[in-house]
Length: 539
Image (cartoon, rainbow, N blue to C red; front, side):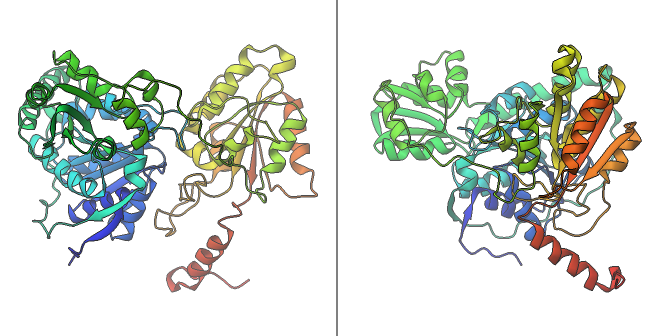
């Protein structure tokens, strides 16, 4: 029986525990800081968690489980929701007979991301309810509440967390065991689940009606709360900003919003009318202040300079004092760098020496942009290296075009590089193209998670393996080379020179396990050999 003992948990761990306690049948996602640990912990707790090739597939798998009447969870970081946006907007129309929660783990301040988009905008655009916890206890409670909302209105729910909530540890009191969710069962609903235009038009109206009902319920729901205080200052806030507000202004009256879309406009108006000065305190975009002002409620917001980066107590104090003077410059931190023993150092050194124009991608190898290599010229989003590189090849004069290469990692290639590979074969540049696929056997940047080309599942158990070179040849690339980067060998340099000169489509797979997982790989291989069902022959 699950323990109800009070625990010290991160927000990610609290979400995982709540998923276990809620009876979630399946969790799917793609690793990305700060969301990665959710599924890893869920799996360790005995839940069924799995890594998908990308976030779109993860959400579609979760939708399928929810269509089967099960409780399902899809996890991703904020930019991952961009990848999953296509099914997100339509599943809002279809609704789900089982509970479906989508975790959007936002990264204000860009601790490990290429942008700091505010995914509260997605809840508005997709017309979905959204909850925002402010600590680990609420992360636990709000996930359970999200399933209750999802099943009450048969609608997916977004649970938006941020880096500080995901990775901070606070006490969590788990609930006693609840009644088990209903058993999965598929019931045909063609009008509701097949979104042809004729079915989608009434589905859109049903969605808006659900949202109106949720808005009315939100006026008195327990997920929002008022902390009484001085009537001179009232603060409307949500998420981690609530914690900063309580410390920076302990005597203020505070309205903390837990269900932040749709908003409880009447409750907000009543609160604002009870205080002399009403300030909306939020991290990131002015989502709340714009929505509240649009409803005709007079509130103050933070100056534009505080839109960037994370909030903290000193910054909140400056906001409260209308301080727009230049902020203290934080001391410089140690810049990240490729590991000293990273096998890809020689790759980037070779690219720099040849003055290649490098269309790069998202992964630990993105650090090749830093000194001493400075061997990456573009980084846009997951999988963009191929499309960007091809675009450059198509338009640059020949002497520059022939120096363009695309660089992508193995996990990123599976995530969204395969479509770019198809584009390369379908619309080949006149002088060909060179793709360098850095295969280190893991998703290194987010903590060495498995992916389809490793041949192991989330829990490291063996499964079917995607063989990258077979896939690439099957798509139609004839020149596919596999090389191991080694000191003292010039094989990679020779292959690159030949590939740049030949003016055909070439893929060079640079394959060697990440130095940080070599020991673990040996242990996993040893365990597999010792398992009777999968015993391997003695050489």
